[in-house]
Image (cartoon, rainbow, N blue to C red; front, side):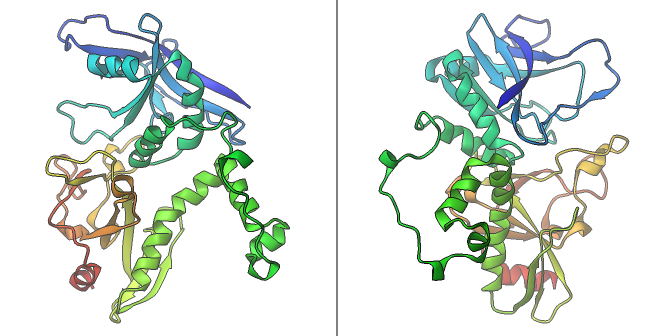
Length: 338
């Protein structure tokens, strides 16, 4: 096991025409300012990639999402505020949404910060959060503040031992692996590549289960094709309807309104608008509220009800509020688009 750290010097030097309470670290190695530079991830997941600024004077670090910054241009800065620095020093471990003043279409990013004695916690967090959406990245960061056993694993002292289920109750996969169900789950929990893959499917699995219980829904299947909507179904004999599942962000907007960062992770190099979805990419969007409510529940909206992008004609805005246009009653939404 090891780490690969893209580390940069963080400071609070006052810069002309910049806010006086601003801290920053500049993303720059060398002098090639024209190319996009890949951020390496170990395909075998033995090494954990960190992308962070370190302030030796304050004695803390600030970590950004390495996946969100892959690839990255040189030179640019990641900024944070004095009150973020103070919160890191006060709590030891802290997380927040990065502020983008005047840039509402910029992808939402969750930053984490910690003091030196929390650095191993940071490494463990990035191992866990690899590839997560920003809502669940923040949820995992908040949970990372809770002390874990020194090994990071459960031990006999953490709870009663549960006997293996009888062979008749074993899942076929457990039987194939010659492991009991608990051992299979432990294997997933302690192998981050497996856990990342499984977690990515959980919201969609809950969505499919919920939709299959809706009267009038038939042929409800998950579509795991590259670039395809997550779920396809028919409603009351309709044509196939396509549903995209999106996780909400952890922090809510004013009025306790959930938010969705509704865009792809990156755009094509020669088409910045390709980051955004089109109204004809799918018929319905399902917003999973788990990052806020910790329940696998959904609200639904037809894509036709969503606002257009202010700068990219034919695309949908990325800064989405799960407001009165979104409904728990999926039947009425499906009926409207069928």
